Length: 349
Image (cartoon, rainbow, N blue to C red; front, side):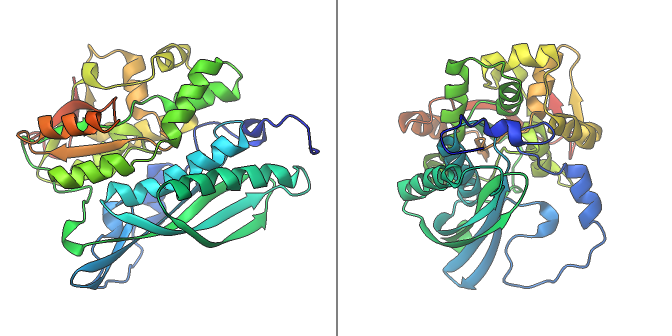
């Protein structure tokens, strides 16, 4: 590919899906039985599949660390850079942290693609970092046949204000801050089946930071939260209730999703990660027979730079929802609640 040639980044990606993420089942097998170092200052535990690592430095200061990178989900290099950066920063925001610095992670086919493409990708990432005052301090790059980009991010948080993916309380309402269906739309993009308006809306959603949602949930006070990314709504929801004393009910009719994802799902145009997510979480998920198949597919759909799933006391839910919408998180919605039974399960009605 030479300078000036039209770039279709998604054509360079092998396989299908939104971000070529290893499935939760494979990760569980890889990590199972490994002896992990313990440290009293480590606030988050790897066993709980938290969004980021949190390490206590002092009584009032902890660092938050995360890393995320993936193959292109859109064709525009600049937009891809924005999305990858927003996605990496999201893990810090999901835990209520403030990202401070970042390092680029680049895998680039130097012999097959003009370096101007990489410049545009990095420019997109830089602009997202600049939007929230995150400083790029370095990075690492390797030559690779398949393009990948992302960030390693370091942030800070008060040790007593960490929002983890567990801690939901019976009676809590569940709020989702972004619509689903991004993985399905991205898969359709690779097949050249998505109109410009739909593609543009998906890009806008994926490039939108979860900063505002994070700040609002901290102001209101919540019990638990996670960002909805590669494991889908039901996969990440499963992390919130797995091996706990609570369960989760999802009201299918209340969940926001991109309308165009319905048609593609009904056609069977689904990312590979969706099947892996469903296979892994099937034992803990019960979907009512009245729920359309396409909706169940959308709930397992792997998201790229998705929204936050927040568990908040019922009495605070109206205030949280109102504040979110008032500050521009316009598609936030109450989609379910935390229940006492069945423990460790998700019911989709």
